[in-house]
Structures are given as C-alpha cells and as structure tokens.
Image 1 (tube, one colour):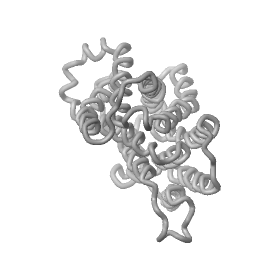
Image 2: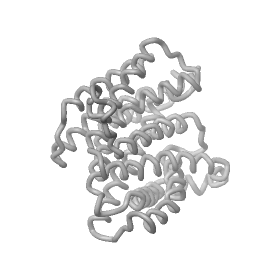
Image 3: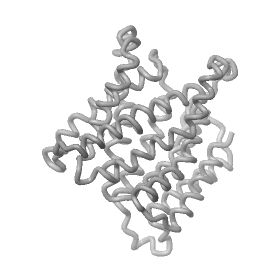
Length: 311
C-alpha cells in the first residue's frame, strides 16, 4: 500500500473480512466514481444559486446527520475516545470537507466539470510520492516517470495544451482551486489510513464531517458578509441535499469501506474511472465539449498513475 507503512500481517488482516464485504468493496470501486461525479455537476450548477462555503457547510451538516442516524450508538458508547481523536477529526475535516468541498465549488464557478475530474485524477500520484518520501515506500524509476507524466498531464489540462505559447497562457483561476483541492485530497487519503481510530468507518466519517462543519462555519459567515450572500430557495436546498446524500454520505462512506477492506493502493483504482465518469456526465448533462487537450492530458495523467502506483 502506498498510503501506509507495510503491514507484516497483510494476509491475515485481509482474511478478517467476509467474502460479502470484499465483494461489496470491489463493486464500490466502480460505483464510487459515479457518486463523486455528481459533485462536479453540483459545482457547475451552484453559481448564482448558493455560495460555495454555504453549499459545503449544508452538504456536510446534512451528511453528518444522515450518517449519525446509523452509528450514533457506537459514538455514544465510545464517546470517551472523541477527545483523544478530536484533533484528527478537525484536520481531516478541514482537508476533506472544507478544502475538498468549498474549494471545488469555488473552482467550479470558472472551470469545467471535465477539468475538475481530470485534475483530481492526479491525486494517487501524490499519494505514492508522499509514501516514498515520508513512509519510506519503495520507489523506482518507473514510479518517478509516472509522477512526471501525471504532473505533466495535469499541467497540460490547466494550460489547455498551449505549451508553445506558455509565457502568454492565462491560467484559469478555477483550475488552481481544483489543484489545491487535489493536493489536499491526497493528504486526506494518507492521514485517513495512517492515523488509527477507535471508531468504525461510518462513525469515524460522521465525526470527521462534524469536524469539517466546525471548520466551515467561520468561513461561511465571512463569505456571506463580504463575498457571496446566499438566499434560501428550492434550487439551493436541492443542491445541498444532492451533494450531501450522493457525493457526500454515500461516496465518502463507500471510500472508507473500500480503504478498510481493500487498502489504499487498490482504492486508487477509482481515480482511473473518475475522469471517464466526469467527462461523460459533463457531456451528457451539462453539454460541455471535450477538447483534444483533454484526451492528451487524460492519457498522461492515467498513464502516470498506472506507473506511479505499480508495486
């Protein structure tokens, strides 16, 4: 695994899960990218309807309530552990719910859903690189080549393939926001695996979502006062519920289950499918065009991911 130190008892740990749990985790590898792609659509629908931080706050407040309905007994039974892990919940909430929530919605105001999906696809490479630098995972020439290819692919998408006129290229601010979110998603994935927890995946996700809500609150107030005030409407409520239930509770719950059963390395497969789902959704639902630089960038990013995540 490239998101945690090597475990000597890998086989015995894998055997601890039932065949049904493993089948569900494998099925979720193909379902989770579809759930996440809904968030890219929400990011494009939100401008003019609801402000980015308000949308992220509503999303995770609702998601925490929904998840908590299924695991509140465990949280109450283990409440003594909350204080010990509180800092973890705040940090993971800041990375996964604030940055990977509100930043995506800010970026979605000026970039396309296709770009969001393709840029996000580079995160497994960052996870592999971080594992080599800080967790002392083995990292060979092929892996370094993969890192270079994937980073090149992300840059190719951000500058729209205009390498010959690089000095004159104006980088889309939305792509920059998404790039920051991509880096923080890699950090979230690493820390989620590296930090042990007394809570099961669902209860832990609920508490992380609560940590994210705490972090989001002051930024939402600042945003409402100085930048984008939000008004309550059926559209804004629909976007909050859609983002909370589909790419929120369902997708993050699936991700936690997959990481627990399959390990972070195999779960990186969802990033291979993510750009395909995102491009298909953007083309079918939003009518976004797919340019040649998207295909070239996708080939570089996914080829780089394939090399960088090889054992």
